[in-house]
Image 1 (spheres, rainbow, N blue to C red):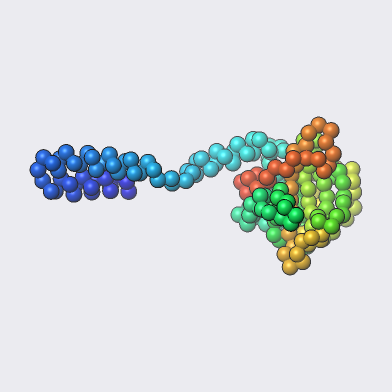
Image 2: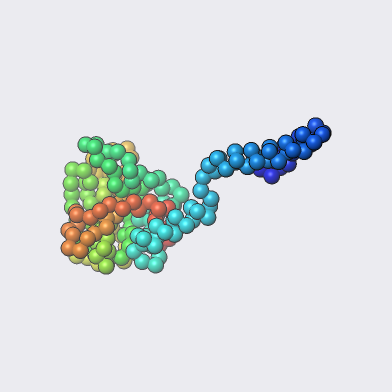
Length: 209
């Protein structure tokens, strides 16, 4: 498109005839190239892929990466709500995965159930620490736990954790899984991690069981 436009500009000036037209054609081309350089066309597909690859290298828990933790939901349905504002001046620090009530919630990675907890904000929740101890995965607003789930239990990627619900401060009309991941310092307890956005990892991976 840019080459065609530059060519048309040159032809238009040349059609006017005379030496001035010949001198003006390069000037028009220079101005066109300068104007084109100022246009921000956004990242290329290759640049986007590079960012996703970098995120996976930095945060992936194993070679397969994270499993999208709600059965029946595709990566294309996810919305990045990590930085959204919440009540009390809080930042969300997680993503909400909207799904029908009762949808199966799956373990996003191998790990150990560190704590099963009920709170006014998160409702029925589960904290699962990765097998290397570096990450904690948080599942909140559950409708119920998977039968037999208990603290200390080892989970494999894809094992059931519970069902999607709206317990805690979630609106009953909008059942969803509040999913967060936390980078843990050595010796840090289940509530002391640094939140990391899981969206690039989940949205960049096809759903697989």
